[in-house]
Length: 242
Image (cartoon, rainbow, N blue to C red; front, top):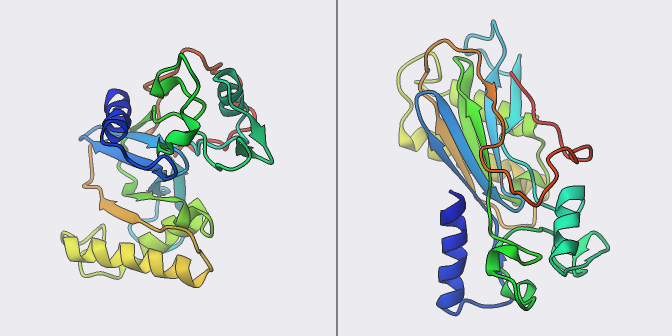
C-alpha cells in the first residue's frame, strides 16, 4: 500500500497533473481475518461494530471504530514532519492554505529542493492500520471528509446499521445485494448534505461476511514512518477497540 500510494503520486506528477489540485484517499484490503486500511489525508475508514447481545437489532450497542487517523497539521507528529521537510504551519494549515498534510497531487506544496516527492511537506505516503476481524464487525465505511465534516463516527455507523437492518437481508438474514449497499451509501451522503456538508462527498459501504468467532480489534500500525516518533500521539483521536 505504501509503495502504491507513492507510485500513484509519481505517476500523476509525470503526467503533468495540475500543481494546484489534489485529493485525499482511503483504501482497504479485506481478508477472512484482517481488514488492512491505508489512508492519505483526512479521508477515513470506520468499522461498524456491534456490541455483544445486539444480534442485528438497530441502534443499540453500535459503535463506529476509526481504522485510520486524519492527517492534519493539528497532529503534533504531522506538524513536526511538515516543518522538518521545510514547510510551515500557519493558522492550522500547511503554508497557511492546505488543511491536510498528506495528499495525492497538490504539487505546489512539493517543491522543496533536494527532496523526493514522498519526503516533501505534503506527502502521498499512506499510513497503514490493520484491524483483526471479529464476529461483531458488521460493515466497513470508506468516506472522504465531506462525510466526516458533519457526521461523527458513531452517527455514520448507526445510520448505516439501521438502514441495512431494514433491508430484506440485513446482517442476520439473507445476503445483501450491491444495490442495497449502494442505496445505503447514497442515504448516508444525502443525510450529510442535509446536515450542511459543502465539501466533496464520496462514500462506500462494504458488508462483511461473518468471520470465525474472534475478539477483533486494532493491531499495531503496519507501516510506521521511521522519522516519526510513535510515542507522540497524545493529541491524536483515540483508536477504539471492540
